[in-house]
Image 1: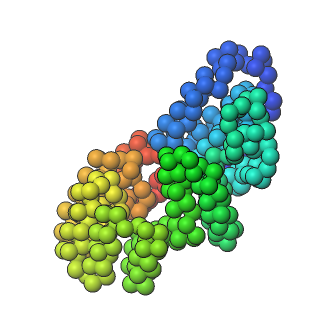
Image 2 (image 1 turned 60 degrees about the vertical axis):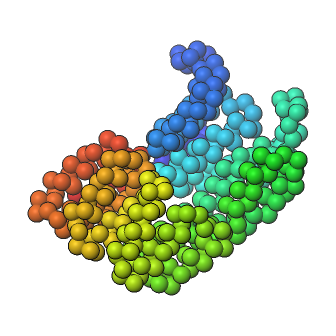
Image 3 (image 1 turned 135 degrees about the vertical axis):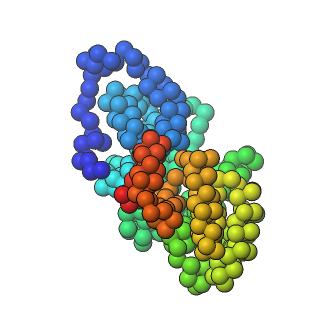
Length: 331
């Protein structure tokens, strides 16, 4: 959905000139202490987030740099989910250097007398690095991730007397671990789309080892991929079932289990696996790859598959997040 950059620079609106202004006396009145933005994000209501951000800006309710940057982070996330990358870049270009003095609490001692350090949310730094990759500029994205990697150790030194904060920043250090996190996402995306090239699978395992991605379900997933390459679908199903038992919302395991069952010619069982996942955890399970696979199975299993896919499409229209690609049903 295209939009011009005026979305991000609304004309000044006087509170007294707006008949609704009496309802929005503060930022909390409009956004419920930001909980509403979080709720919209959890529900995938991405169209509503830019609207809410515009309202807050036009009513001059963002009074501190911290307010502006938090709302900007949500706006960037919402616009990115809607694939409005030109608008995302416009938003990010409106931000100064993250390390400049007016993005530090010390610059605003009257507002924050007992705080120091950067007011920039870590989520915004993360999005700043990720967005170029999502829009096709991989090198710039990797450069920004390296910058982020350099930033985190400094925060660890600052927080050395606070155990909870240290744990939080160590997790962030893990997220910024060279370009491995980005490579992991790209590799998993290729595998989820059906690319089972042995070289790719071995690289995926290597990346996971580099970033310490060994936990429970990951081991089973990697074993399952080995079985997939060897066409031992029965063993792969067993490993994926263990993944699902640990985490009922493991969509990768659910999807791949269904594919293995299809390869075993248990088409009705594979359809049930995907349908049950959509019924049980619709917001989590509802992604384009899973829906494409389910529709392909319908086409193989039923003569009147168009009617079944239309029913699925109507259901998706009611429950899907705003960024879902409805064309995945191929109706």
